[in-house]
Amino acid sequence: MPYNAVIVKQSCSATESVLQFMRTTWEPQKQDMGFAEPHSFQKISLPDDMPTDPDIFLQGIDSKSLHIGIREAVEQALACFRRGLYMPATAMLAAATEATWCECGTVVAKKLTDAKLDTLFSDPYFSISRKVSELSKALDQPDGKALLKPAGQSIAKVREAEVWTGVFRDRRNALHWTKAKSFVADHIETATLLIAAPLHIGTLEAIRLQC
Image (spheres, helix red, strand yellow):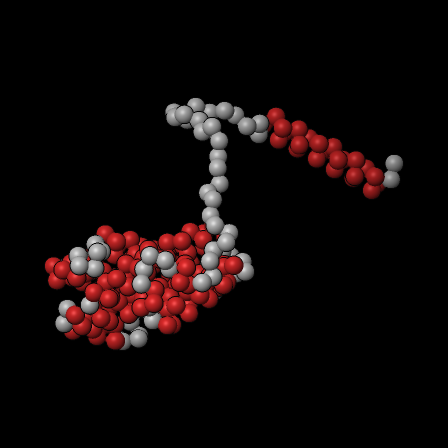
């Protein structure tokens, strides 16, 4: 028998042995996990027809009062999402979110006559994470809470917007090659962040308008 044929025959035998080992050793086993087994698994349903009109997307808040640049960023984020460009959609909505925090923080600082906060939001070199954190702290003070109530908001809603913004910032940072080695963003993750946008942008815009 030729030498090459011997190698092929031995390789086939080895492969069959490995497959047999996998069938006998890796057979799924039912384990008692201590709780009831699920009857079924269901994928979360998210809208495939996300509206591209910012007025429709931002229903429930006074979107007409938003800065034109914020509205444009939202519109571009929605357009990217509809085309399956999930990372660009994330980047544009992150830009809109950061701009909303800045617009809100600028007027809150003046309303509270908080010189430190005003300096922070006037300086473009301070990080957005610090601006978000300091505004949240300012609104948690007695004078800040006095602004929240007539705006129909609460410090809990501000904290939720802060957490949501942090998630966006982490996803957006994937654009920096030193932060992450992949530009992958999937449909469900991006849609989940988009769906929450009107709620949290609305919170910040309502506070801004109250000032």
